[in-house]
Length: 302
Image (cartoon, rainbow, N blue to C red):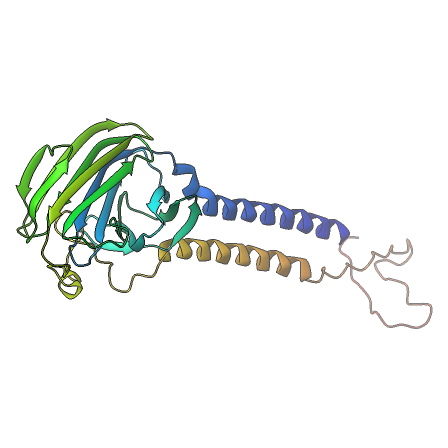
């Protein structure tokens, strides 16, 4: 019995160790991909779109070498950033928003979240580039710092429809009208290295501070250059990652319960000791000295 329990104890140790390793691997996997470069990163600036502040939209696309799940981190958000969405985007354009983590270093905020299964990411936030001032003549500066190598960086600045005298420095590579009738100044940069900074200063006049688009109108817009993103209905933050964790915990619990069951099972009863027959018994066992009645046992043979 002691040998059996020692074997079961060893089996339990192996199972617990293997389960702990799997759990740690499942939880740590997203962090291993943090340095993977980006195939593309689109930045959209929409001053006074549906708010007095500027709406900033980030649409990074991970390189094909990125392992999923992927933990995204960007350390250059302004402290006043009101982050609305941190999502992964499916091939059909569905925004699946994830729970985010924030931290502050100096005058910048860092935001992280995990994309469970998609390489297309999406974030948006509002920031007051005028720092509370409300002049008729607006002048704002935005800077982007590449968190990793980016093969293709695209930046666009959308002019408010009723703005006049709109200028941007440096000069835009192109000026075009999007599907919603807004004028876009666009820039393109190739083979951007981690840490490179790009700054854009734009100025214009508006007679009012009332946004030309209401947030109610914007609620149905889709992500991308055509509109602010919308989370998929019923999507819970971090749902995919939590599901994986729950599955791993369930497996661990099952293994633990199985091992405990084996250890708690009573050992089988020992077989009765064999009794040597008398040479003169001719196949009959001697009766018990105390008169016990075990009966006779017939043996085959002569």
